[in-house]
Amino acid sequence: MTQSLERLLPVLATIPGVNIPVSILQGVYIAASQRKIEQFEQALRYEVGLLNQRLEAGTLKLDHEYVKSESFTANVMQALRAAEIAESEDKLRFIARALAGCSLSFPAPTLDKFQTLRIIEGMSDRELKVFVDYFQLLDPIDPYQDFIPVDSQVSVAGLTRQEFVAALLGLRQLGLLTQETVAVKPDPWTDQTAPAQAWKLTALARQVATLSRVGFEEL
Image 1 (cartoon, helix red, strand yellow):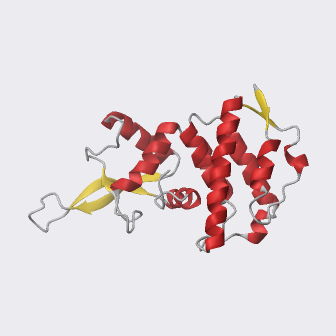
Image 2: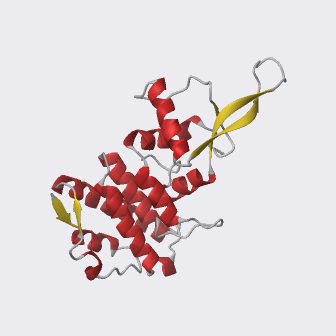
Image 3: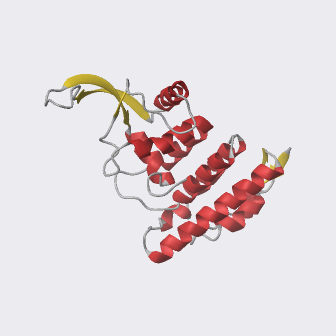
């Protein structure tokens, strides 16, 4: 079943400065059920409403030039393609949050929003769950410097160790995780260290987390 997406424009138009012409989405359809379109519209309405509240409170900063640009419109189209193949409502909410995040201004280094949305589109449901929950296993102060040893038996709720590792491998293929040699203490009673392989988040993972605000609030 194909569904028109023009109904999403009034939601996006509530972001200050956004003025996407109706002609952009006229005749644009995606092969998705009515329920999926409604879920995505509800998710986008919630995320945009939350974003506007935080803009008014001054806790987030709008990128005024970007939301008026063709680049933001391209982000919208990209998010719609991602929504078309989303496997769950959680994935739809994640896409909606990332799309809302595209309207924001971020500190350096410059965030590649198009690249980040492309990576999000490629994440499976399980990979998304592991990516979000992975942050709960790391140092909240600086998760990007923390790591999880490859031979660790840690996992996340609802997944077996084998499923968890398979998702980690998928995230590595997407460029969100890397395996690096780190120094660890094999004996907690000594100060001796030994080299070991560990999972670490990449710069691309930082982009995805920043755009979708993973680690700032629950999905």
